[in-house]
Structures are given as structure tokens and as C-alpha cells.
Image (cartoon, rainbow, N blue to C red; front, side, top):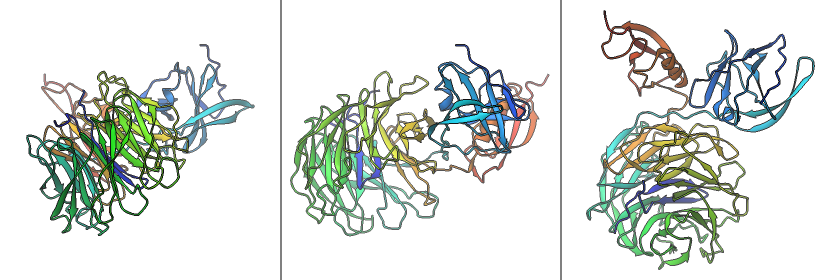
Length: 563
């Protein structure tokens, strides 16, 4: 029987490509800081969000200091005094005083955007007559920005999406595992190659029964990327060898363990050819199919894992250049299977993660050149959303760090992907959670800020990353199971993407527009029977329009009802 959940795609890390598919669908008194001639202090500490990451604290009529919200949240009680000590025309030192904790370093306004770092460091600062304080530097990372989602039709019930250049034109294409009611196919959408990240209509290719996951990679070494699907009902994988630059595929099925719900490919044997691995949900095993070198495969070898597999990924976890295997298990663990040579995995070690892990991804999250693990956890009450396990360097892992939804919503996570979305060299985490895409911005050292929401298509079950318009930044793709569509969100970080501000107060609209790297243009007033006085009726250009940085947005603000 077909598993009742989605597939999830992780990008290619450490020489592996992986596709995961969830099997079950859940649903004190503070000392004051002496004020010097150059300092400006505020005894009241209002919080003014100026973007997803930064709160502004006004210290007088001419200076505003920016405080990373992630740092702000580390204080158990709000500091009673904030000082902005003017150092340079465009920078300042923020000092906040609390019991046993002296604040952080930031940058002052006079500039519209703030260069934000990512590390915590202890700094000694000498102020005025020799006041020495400890300063914790925790600068928030900048938030990526995306265009509004553009959707394309797929086959019935897309469970998973994979990204790869199928037709060899240099522009990444899409392959989706689709199927319901015995209509099992892979939908291929070729990139138009215009640099706009747009796609031609789908082509359908038959696969095995219960297709629920897909990956893309060159299996036979001919320079053309092929497609592999996991077929949960047939207990097989379908290998579709690319024979005509994405126009035709030659299919052959191979046996796996019972109910393969996730598939990954990587060179496990070290011979330069990609092997196939499946996570088998009904036997608590992974099946390894070694490549004969021509895109055909040897009979499966099964290896034990933890209980109730949901997802599999491949990466070099212990630094020995032989790719290893990691699985997410509904028994609230991940299993690590280290490669003992030739693509054999005689044993596994389990590590605790959050409740109900349903997808796993591998990537270097803290910049130490060792790949780490992250799971998306599909817990019924939404207690945890993500678990991060940092690598000790030898294939063993530090205890998990959980990241929860600060709004208390159920994440309903189905898949997780990894990639640098804001161009700072540190990979972000992306989650598809049935209602939207969530991005957790990397603050550095493998810690992450609370998630940002980006609207995708209805019921996104799988997320993948790739540079679809070849502009050097990673875009997002989601497979939307309920609507039979795939959504593309192009990365617009650093550009002005007109935000939706209708119905907001003028002050909130201004802050939202500035956070989107835009400027407020002409403000006109009009009477409205619907929109309350002081709130925005409309903006121009329309929301979602991409403009050069600092472009102007004109607003129409309500005068209220005409008397």
C-alpha cells in the first residue's frame, strides 16, 4: 500500500544526492552604564522590528541602534538601559546591562542595511574613564528573500521533487515522483533555459507501483543525468536511463526491501559510479544496489538500521572519503552506517533526535569541514520542528539541538533541505511543512534563527534547492501534493521585492518596505469604506514585483469613511 506521506529532496553534499520520503503523514537590579560625552542612552527599551532578524531601539531623535533579535532573546530579562556609543559615522557599540550578562556589539543606523556577522565572541571594551565591560557579540544573519511562487502542473499527487540538468543545456530541470490510483509516473519539467527560471509543460514517464521518491544523477557515465524512483507498493526502484537528452528514458526495475519510501544515490564503492540506496519502512533496513558501471545494478544487499525508517541520505560522515549512510527513523533516532569499504555497512549506531523524524539531510552546518545531520520532525503536537546533530569529526555526533516554532504552531514537517540562501557562505535549513516553506537562517557555528515563512503552493510535501535561473543563488522548489503542482520560488536576496502591506498601519508598512530593500515613494490619501483610517489601501507596483535595490513603492493610505 502506498505510504501516506511525502517525499523530500536534499541537495547534493559530499558527493551524494538524496531523496527522502516520509512514510506516515501526521499531522534583578542592573548596574547603570555611565554616559560619556559620546554616548546616547535609552532607559526605555521599545522593540521595533525592522526586518525578520533585527529590532531597532531608539536612543534619541537622531540615532537608532540595531539589535539582533536572536541575541535579544538570549536575555532572561530585558535590560533596563541601552547605550549607543558613537564610534564612527556608521557604527556604534551597544551596551545592555543585566545580572551576570553584559550585552553585545552592533552597528548603528545612518545606513539603511546593516552588515551582520554570525559569531558569538567575548569582547572587552574600555569606555570613558576606564569602565571595562564584557560584551557578547551575536550579530544576526540576514534573511533571504524570494519571489512569489510560480506553479506548474504535474502528474497526480506529486510526492517528491528533484533538481538536475536532464537535457544537458546547463539549466537545472525538475523531476517529480507522482502517483495515485495506479497512475504512477515521474513528471519531467524541462527548464526553458532563458535565465528566468521558467519551465516547459511536463512530460510523463511510467514507473513502478507506488512511486514516492525520485533523484537525478548520471548512473551510466554517459554525461546525461538519469532518474531513479522509489516504488513503495512494488518493492522496487525504477531506473530511467536518459537516452536522448531528456526526451526519452529507458526503464528497468530492481528489487529492494519491503516498502522503499526514500532513495539516495552516491558512489559508495569508490569506483566512480553511483550506487542506489533505499530506506525500507517495513523491514527496518536499507537496500544497497551496487552499480555494475553501465547503469545496471547488482542484486540488493540489505543492512539493519533503527526502527520504522522514513528517510535516507548519503555523505562522508567520518572523513575517510568513503560515503556513509544516515537514516531518519520514526523511533525518534537517526541511524549512522559507516562505510567499511566497497560499499558495505555491517553495523549502525543510533543517535536520539526530536519526536517523529520524517526527513534527513546532510551538510556542513558549522563550517568545520565535517558534514552534520538535520532531521525534520513531524510530531503530532508540533513540539519540535528540527533537530541538528553536529559532527565531532569522526562520524559520531554531539547531542541534538532542537529548533521549535516560536508561534507554537504545528510544523507538520515533511522534508528538509540544506543550502546557502543569503550568500553569506553558511547554509540555511529549509522545511516544507504542508502550508508553506520555512527557512531557518544560519547564525554561524551550526546554530539557527527562528524560522521565516514563505508561501508556496497548497500542501507542499517536498522541498528541493537549485540555481534555476543561473544567477548564482539557490532557489526553492516544492512538490504540492493536494494541488498536483510544483512551485518555484526564485531567490531575490538583495533586490527589492515589493512586499504585501495592504491593511497595515503606515508605520508598519514603512518598516516592512525598508526590510524588503525598498523605499517608500509617494504617499497619497483616499477615503475608504473598508480600510480603517491610517492603514494602507494599496501599493504600487503590485506585491511580488522584483525591482532594483532601493526602488520606490508608492502607497495609498486610508482617510477612513467620508463624512
